Image (cartoon, rainbow, N blue to C red; front, top):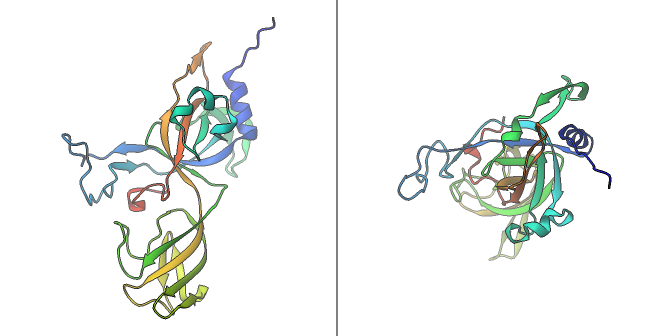
Length: 246
């Protein structure tokens, strides 16, 4: 029988060619946590009550797959949910030029190789459509006024107000508002203060690292890629102000 030797560098070359760039934000437990209950302080100005503080975002290369297309699904099926993904992170990757192109003449360590549970990963080449209801000039679930749940907004498709008492719909034109980050800033016609209105928009999917799969990573004096389970939560992180997006 022929023995097949798989090297870490072959994995890394595979990820360079077939992987995708993601934004990785390392998480650190906030010092506000109550050591007896394990709960964060409500309204903490550092973590926003999420219990995590996030480092500035770094662009890294990884291989992201649906769990149902991998053999790991059978081995760890009990821990997966619909929508989960597996991400393989290499220990090293080709160096990048200032233009962002891979330079295959040299390698450099990948900071995301130290990824762990609670870290945040954003897919920068994908979009998800969501609609939600906001209240004009009113904080909602701990978010600033007129701020959408999902932080990485790419495009607002429509803004409108439905009045069930008069059975009318009031659409708002693109010139009535502008988008700053995930916040709707009104500059023209607008709903009355306190009124509910609907926003349909596109945003980057943001995942949280749910678990690091236990498997041998150090073989033949080399580091093989680390594999983690990504879980999608609407909003990604509850409080965007607790995240430095870089």
